Amino acid sequence: MSDKPVLEVDSICVTLGGRRILDHVTFDVRAGEFTGLIGSNGVGKTTLLRAILGLQRLDEGHILVSGSPISPRNRSLGYVPQRIVVDPDVPMRARDFVALGLDAHRYGVTRRTPRQRDLVDQILHDVDAERFADNRLGGLSGGEQQRIFIAHALIGQPKLLLLDEPLANLDPKSVQEVVALLHRVARDYGVAIVLSAHEMNALLPVMDRVVYLTGGRAASGTTDEVIRSEVLSQLYGHHVDVLKLHGRVLVVAEPGQENQDIPEHATLTVN
Image 1 (cartoon, rainbow, N blue to C red):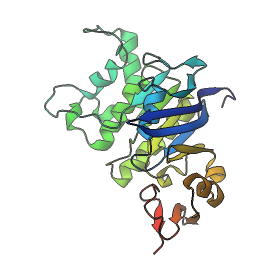
Image 2: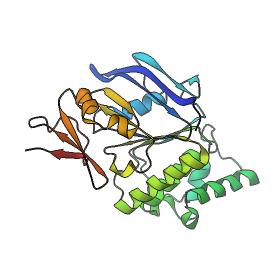
Image 3: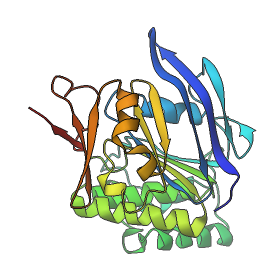
Image 4: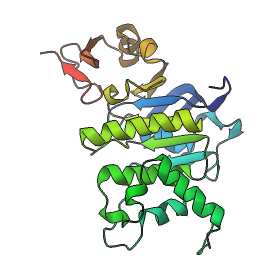
């Protein structure tokens, strides 16, 4: 891993509808690192990803990707959005959707060169999608579609890959497979990965860093540095306990504070 950050988020603030969504959020991500962006619904995860993509205006602070200011057309960025609705009747093969990532910045139909076709085949191989590459995209399972969406984002050879809730609505087996795939992508491609999720347990075996977001504020660092009672208590503004049981992390709210934005499925409520 390089010591030079691929992504630098420096004290950014975002206000929407009169509400401060992000409040001086700061963290960085390096090449080959797998970073989990953890938080419950409404804490600003998608807003933060949109800011990194250059789609959300900042009130304060700045963001650099590969040392350059953010831009929606930055080719160093790959993105898998939270929801991609695929009409099952659209006659598009999975491999054709992946190939669109080669020239998403252009209009019209492009004739593929042999080198481009080879690149599509290589990406499909790398995400273990060869067996269904010629199937209709809308007919694939949720886990299979996620592999194709990741391939589509990777084919432009980004240095930073952002994924907004890619594990939502997947069965446990598919969650494990997608997490293992992304860990391999980070390692083999040297891509910095930022993946948003409600909870961190599925990511614990592979996360290099965590950005824990709540109330517009964030704590970042390694899992051991961030997922500690004293750190999260300061972040939430009230006492929480962190329990580690059978390889899982449980964040425990004090009585009366059970609904204070603690991520779902990572929480044990005290009655």
